Image 1 (spheres, helix red, strand yellow):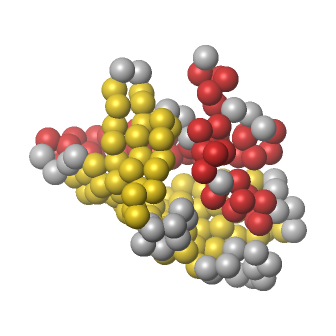
Image 2 (cartoon, rainbow, N blue to C red):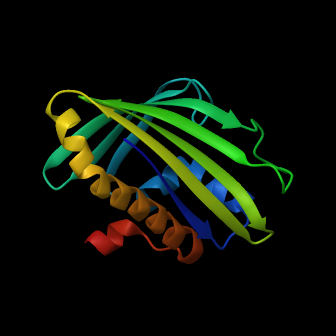
Image 3 (cartoon, one colour):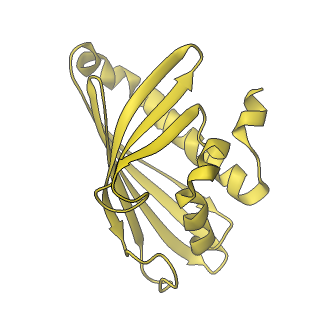
Length: 162
């Protein structure tokens, strides 16, 4: 299953990157994030493997995330015509996914975030996945909207959930 979602954020690209990369900020916009702990490598760098835990209601989901691409390596002073690429693979029981994030400067004060997503499933989920495609797209859009609200207005999803 593959799909692409995008959103425009009314902030300079460098600021968007800072907020996306800052580990302490993630729980403010990534619903249900319990922990994101590097197991090997350096946070945010290619090759880093992290254990990620999400909580949804009473269910806990543990994932392994591997950073597969980050271009450019130095995320400061990036020319306005250059697209920033940040990619990762995520593995959980019965699932593999890849997220390919592209951040483009649409103006000095605006950033376009495009997220290409690919999922592969095993077992029962392999049969159910085509029916669940709209749910996955909706969930990806929600993450992007939550980030936009956090970045532009400081909205913390944890307060909205309480």
